[in-house]
Length: 465
Length: 43
Image (cartoon, rainbow over all chains, first blue to last red):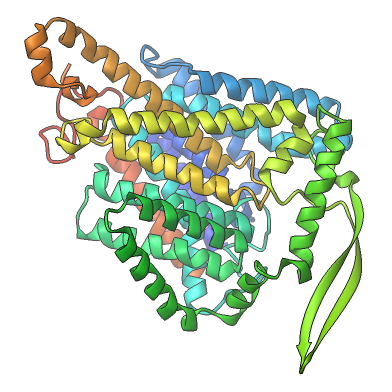
C-alpha cells in the first residue's frame, strides 16, 4: 500500500510538472513502459489507464506546444513504421489469433513510441534527459535485484525483483541482458551528464549502479547475462591499448571473484559447456530447428506466438564417470509450445523472412550510423569542442546495442521497449548531428580554402554556427 | 524494506532530475554557444 501511494504521488508530481514543460510527459511514458508501475502499485494504479494517459499527454503535448522545425523523420523511423504495418498484417492472419492479439497490444505501442520519440528529442539536453530517465527507470529494477543478490536472495527463477511477476523486464534473462547492455550509457552519463554534472556523488552512484548491473546475471543465474558480460568485456578490451595487461587483470579479477559466487550461479553457468545434458539448452536448439522448417513452409511467418504450434521429441545425454567406466544416460523428452528463446528466431517464426530482414536492417543501420557518428565527431571530442559529447554517446549507444543483440540470441526480446527506446535515441542523435553539421556548413563555405584547412575536417570544428 | 529503499532512491533521483529540467532553458532550444559541462550557460 505504501509503495502504491508513493508511486502514485511520483506520477502526479511528474504529470503536474509536465504542465510547465510538456516534454516531461514523454519521459513519463518511457518510465511507464520500462518499470510498469501498475505491477508494483497494485492497489491504486491498475484501475487508472496511466499508460494511455501518458501517451496521449506526450503526443498531444508535442503536437500542441512543441517546436517542430527541428524534428526529422529518418530512414530507421520509416523502417519501424513498415515493421509495425507488417506485424499488424501478420497479426490479422495469425495462426493463434488470441495470443497474437495479446502480444500486438503492447508491441504496437512500443514500436509507435520508438518512432515518435526522436521527433521530440531536438536538443542536447533532451537527448541526455531521455538517456538518464531510461537508465534511472531500469535502475529501479536493477538496484533492487543487486541489493537482494548481495543479501543472498539470488538463484535461477528465485530472485524476486520488486514484484511477483516473471514478465517483461522482471524476467531474469531479460533483465540480465538489459542491465549489462545499459552499462555503457551509465558511464557516459557519469562523464558527460549536465543534469547531474560529474562529481564524486555521481561517480559513486554510477559505480554502484554498474556493480548492480553486473550482479543481476549472478542473482538471476541467467546464462544470457554471462554472454552479455563476455561480449561487453571483449568490446572494452578491444578499445584498450594494453589489451594483454587488461585481459590478464580481468582474468585475475574473475579468479578472485569465483569463490565468492553463489553455487547456484556457477552450477548453472557450467551447463553452457555441457549443453547436451541440459534440457533448457537442448529445447532451444530444437525450437530453432523447428522455426526454420516452419518458415520454409510459411515464408510470411505465423504471426505473434506462432511457436505455440511446435512439438518435438529429443534425447538428452548425461555422461557420468564411474571409476574406469563411463556411464551414458539417455532420456527421451517430448515438449510442446516452447518459446523461441532467441530474438532472431522470434522474428523469423513470427514475421517470416521479410520481418526478420527489416528488423536486422534496423539493427545493422544503428550500428553503422553510430560508428559513423563516433568517427566523424571524434575530433570534436578530443579537442573538447562544445559537441564533444556526441562521439562518446554514439559509441555508448553502439555498445549497448551490440551487447543487447548478443543477449538477444538466447532470449526472445526482439520488441523489448528498452532496445526500441535505444533505437529511438540513436535516430535522434543521428538527425541531431546531421542538423548541427548542416548548420555548420554555411560557416565553412563562407571561409577561404586556407581558413578551412585551419579548421580541419571534424564536424565539431564548425559547431559554433 | 529493500523494495521501499530502492523505490525511494531511484524515484527521488527522477524527481530531482525533472525538477532541474523544468528550470533549464536549453531543454527546448540549444543555446547558440556553450551549454556544455564547465561552460557558461551549462550546468
